[in-house]
Image (cartoon, one colour):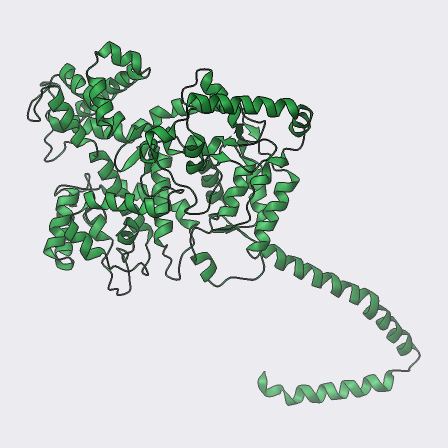
Length: 618
């Protein structure tokens, strides 16, 4: 049983009867129990929604929702509307069925992309690369801890045919946001215990910072229990020496605590909104922090840490691209390991691990194995936080290009000329250079259109591949489903995931030897139009959703139809000028000499009689 199977339930707002259990079973509190903090009738509506659930769902399912999401879980109406608005541009470009609903794969794509783009968070099991058996196991693990077993059994046979609405997608996002915010609470409780505090204690600011330090260590090390134990034996100074970002982390912690104080300072001011039923204790007259206060700080760190970490990602990208083959987004493996031997400790992944991640390009016999920079930056080994359900990773710059395309096109497909016009205005690389759309890339885009009745599916593998070759440093190379996986170093095998010193030195030696033998050829290649690196181009298509094929569609594009109309008009013009005009001139000459007077008179009489017979139709 997988998370995909759970997603395969009837939509919340389905208008037609269905035997499938609604998605509200999972997102019940998010979609059906929506309360507005500013609405005086919010409580009454929440109670009414609860009565609705009570009428529709079995009592054991209601209990399961309470266990999974918490009895007091609420999603404010404004937040839900904001989430729907942020999802809507992508939603318009999703292929849908006749009822305007998307399938479960499109749902996974939208949810994962939302979290990566907004929070820099990658949901384990929903990654683009990881759509194989290992992802199913990750999804099952997420489900197992999200809701009780007996509820999962009741949902296991649900049908995916009903599809999902935009409201369903927003509800699922709200639930996962709640899970992420609550994801660090067990680690926070362990941190309290490690520093000698009880969860019932009220802490001073210094004590809270002490507990939060222990939390950050657990959050960063994830399930690496042994590594955490070794680190906690060290002094604060030794930790700071072994983790160069530790001072920055501590500053980040203080900033979030101060933000919490500032927020609650305004909440207790005259006219400020107080949290109803909150167990948070802090106020300016009694500046002590409860465990609930610490939980609120942890939640803000979970959703905002990605933005802080992005500066580290940008720095690593710049270092990697210093060794790039100009304009290709590819770094020869010899240069990659040469940087590692020169002190860049990041670049130590083994060739086998890089291939498993989909990072190593072996398509060029001339250049040898090369690291694809955009795939490397998006791989799971560069995620800084490895929670059991999610990772904090580097942003995907290509998603910004997709957002602009989706906003401009507003449909699942676009005309190739329209796409070219939009993409040509994009900037690329660290120096914001114009998009490099070569003649060969223009021809490739036309080939994609010809394979899809004259249009380009925005969410297909071939178009994603085309974007990669236009923006090689921003857009990852897309692989077919199941061909690669996003395993973490621990999942792949810690020893196997790291290259040995001998492996790195041998790769550097081979690279230098190849460059020496083929030096003149290398210079010729570097001065070419950069199309040679397209050896990795694959003609295999894979659409995000089969709905694009299943719906009725025209066999010609708008441009193709217009071309046929213009051709018909041109043919008619030739016929008029070349045939009818001389004929009319000849008739005019004949009439001047009286040759046609009798014939025309006869025709006029027949025409008059014909109109008489049709008078009853007028």
